[in-house]
Length: 309
Image (tube, rainbow, N blue to C red):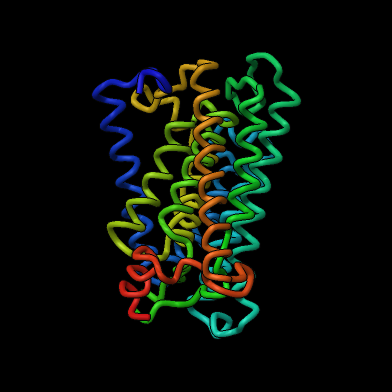
């Protein structure tokens, strides 16, 4: 990790582990309980907003930028939409499947815009209004293109459905491990580029938490896991300046070599995801806007089996 990050010691490593486990457990509690979901995603945001506005909570430097607030709103909007799909008759309407793909595409587009904004505004290493030391460069453009690819490679949303299990999860079977890996690499590179000071936490930490939730707790619900964990983190990071604590001080190395490396890995892998998608489309004569294209894969079948579909 010395190539990407500095400040890693026993205390900070244990704090990071607790950070990841905490978000995995909170996500799992919310996933299994509708009441817990309402408390965490409807009541808690109001309580925290009142506490910040009244001065009971000091907030964090992240709250000084428009993007941080937009990210909280968009992440929570995704959670609300998914809750409606899971627990109301809306989930049985055909048009409901448009919401998950639209909110994810919008979320990615926001990050692509931010990449290009950093590229245009920070030609040299500088401090942004949120207290992040960032440095724009060609790597931002590479990763912005990779982000666009993660929108293009969203396939099989016609197959989004609610599981036949007690937790009634929102399942997207066509979102296989290949897409999840491509998105994870792209998003980590984005956070490393644009929210540098928090890259270990807002990037690697919560992305790993979502992957753990997908492959250790409930297959096929990665987007639901991702939205819930991102929302919880966004509320947490805007409410508290947690990186003021000594054991939450893992920071990037700010190496141009690292920035180039992540940008190249992100775009190359996602080009591979795109190539795989095109291969499946032409080989099986599938329309990705109207059909699921990975239904023959083990990843797809595992998601179907895990949700009694």
